[in-house]
Length: 344
Image (cartoon, rainbow, N blue to C red; front, side):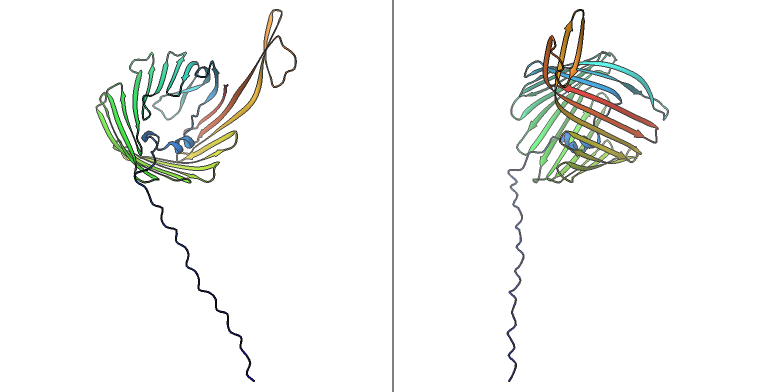
């Protein structure tokens, strides 16, 4: 009797992988790009923070919702130009007084320094799409005062800017979104005082995870930058700058780490210079206690009330501490700075 062979199970045919159709691009509704002058914004914020050497203290006092006063004290060395490779520094100190007016359509900033310099900045929204920006500086030194005005126009998928400055300086730039992630632009300028002109081109490609920019100008500068967002808190940054007229090449690599109340940035470049910048935001309620008795007056700062003073002023303020250092092994130049910003 022949053995009964069970029928072999037939496997169902493999299903084809579903193909995701490419996303259709609506070229009539492209996003508006960032301004032309800010195409390297992410890289500059991470690689080139505002480093300083010495001690710096800033205090801002708000008088009302729109007007505030600021005080700034700086003590540290200042580099002076020298023909030798050695860095020459002289100790300096100055005080700066400022007044600020902030409105949804108008912002005014003014600064007066003890060395005689006066700085002023203004931003005014003339319309929903047209903005006027102006800045000026007056000094006691001859031919060092300057001023500039910018007219920025924001279109649906493009931006344009016209610049006008002293010394017969004229400039204009335009940037256009060509895809949802790619924008292209160009600029021209004319410096009548120095009889020089130039033209430049730029490209920027950005997604949720990376930003790549490139810029070239007739002045000889080629600038490239790349930002990779590893996570919401960590970014890796690199840039490359080449001047084909002077044959100077510089590249750097850095990081940007953002915590809940802290931000740490650092970099190292091809010249052997390393730097780091630590900024910590301290949100705490401080009690400024002013007590008076007899012929003496003392001002104490407490985190808790230790006694009942004669006069007590309680304020909710914000403290921001800044710590930075820079080491240049080739030039044997070492910098260290500490700053504290107090504001309501």
